Image (cartoon, rainbow, N blue to C red; front, side, top):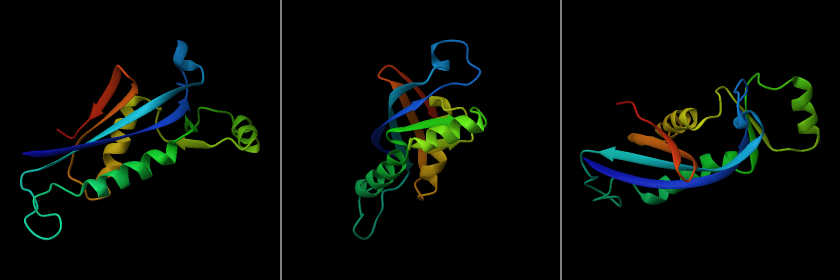
Length: 140
């Protein structure tokens, strides 16, 4: 089996609704997303002969997906009052509502399926929320 690994990062704020502890407060992370792609055979023809996939295509996908969240406030659907969301948007805050609790675990699953949409044979996605703490998702 061949593996190709690439990574990108983004800075984003979040909080954990219903959590008792520091993470219930709004705080930020430098989220690091590591994409691992697998294949049993390297490509045998054309420009990508001898490759798993073109690193440029992987970098472009990583950049697009991580740039979407960069320097934004990421919050779970239903975790804020409508008035709060409206007030923050009125102040021109960059905000992204997600249908999951914004944890490293859930982000790893989210990005796993996002990268599959690009046609990559994704083996695993790992998301670090701090330099020493990460979560991974795979279908295995």
